[in-house]
Structures are given as structure tokens and as C-alpha cells.
Image (cartoon, rainbow, N blue to C red):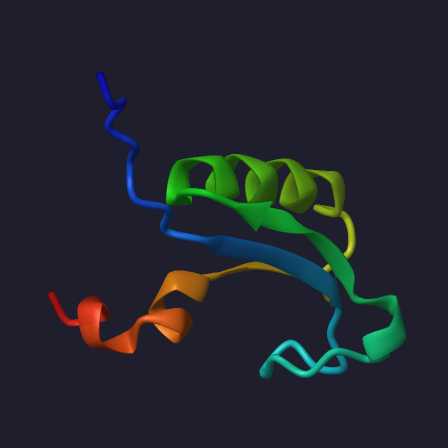
Length: 79
């Protein structure tokens, strides 16, 4: 019997030091922390939260969740 697999909704978690609190420009792209790629938002959120809490004392350091599935399949994102 074939096992039903859940559709992957890939999410990327990245972060690093920003050049300004008003924007999303990293100070040094070579130092951007690529945390990982996750199969769904819940696991990406868990990784983001852990990294964000580790850098809470650095106002210039921010972590983001990028919805890769929206970039890979933009036609399905509107649904």
C-alpha cells in the first residue's frame, strides 16, 4: 500500500547582522547565517525562534523565515 506523503512547503531560515534597523540589508553577506531548509513552517519557526532567542542581546542581528515554496511555485501561493 502506498504511503501518502505530505506536500513539502520548503522554508529557509537565515539571519545575521543588519546594517540598519530600518531595513533588511546585511552588513556582510559572507557572514550570513544559513540555519537550514525545513519541510514546513512549524519546523522552520522552531529553528527561527531558537536562533532569535540566542541573539536577543544584539539588536542589529535578525533572523528571517523565507517561504521558498512561494518562490518555487508562485502560481500555487495565491490559493
